[in-house]
Image 1 (tube, helix red, strand yellow):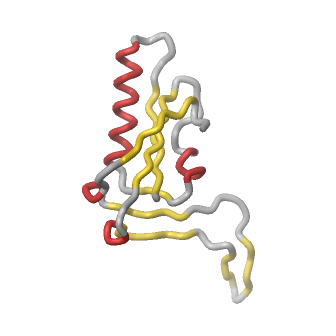
Image 2 (tube, rainbow, N blue to C red):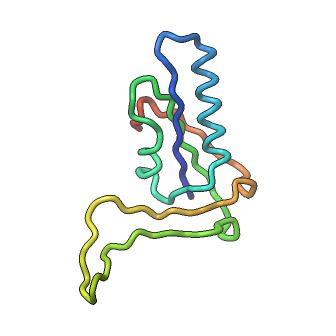
Length: 114
């Protein structure tokens, strides 16, 4: 399973149609994006945290053949022959050709939270 988050800004008080257009635009950003992650929590950080953000979380299952590149942040790095721990943000990122993603489940995220 892979996840991708996106958001578009919708000003509160605007027409409902404007909110719908922002939601559709966020869905397009998910569908046409190439960078996906295997970590749902990481994807949620890309769904917008500001008031008026229309957040969208996409979830998809893809074949291994669809993955063009895979990046995994290390637990530690080597500098000058010494190992140092890496603290904080870690991600497992997949670069995927959007044309190979057949089905995406979209989830609305309110103000960037789950």
